[in-house]
Length: 128
Image (cartoon, rainbow, N blue to C red; front, side, top):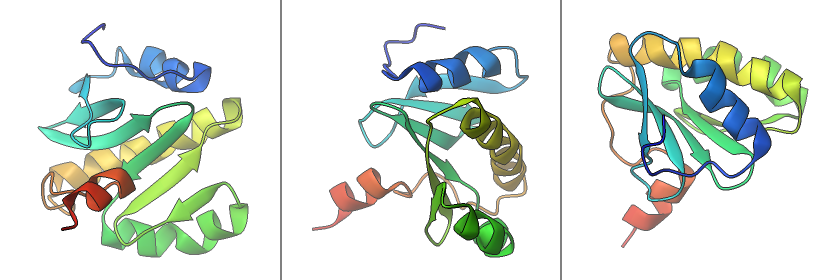
C-alpha cells in the first residue's frame, strides 16, 4: 500500500484502507502533485489532497445527473466533470465510496476522457 504518497488526514487514510481490497483499484501519487490518487483502468478517478479533501472525476453526465442532490447536501462542490468533498466523518467516507463506483464506471465507459488536468489543483497548474 505504501507507494510513497501521503494522504495526511485520518478520513483520507480510511478511504485508502477501505479500497485496498477493491479489484483493479491501485494507489499512486496524484498527477497534480498533491496527495494520493486512486486509479482504475489507468485513470486517476480520485485525488486525496492534503488533509481530508477529495476530488472525484465523475464525468459530465454523472455530475449533471447528481448535481441537484449533491448541491443541496452542502457537502460537495461541483465542477463540470468532478466533485470535491470535505471528509469530516464516516458518512462523508461512505459518500465518497459510493461516488467512487460511479467514477470507476465513467472511466471504463470513457466518459472522463483520460487524465487531462481535471482536479482544481491540476487545472490551476496547467493554466499559463
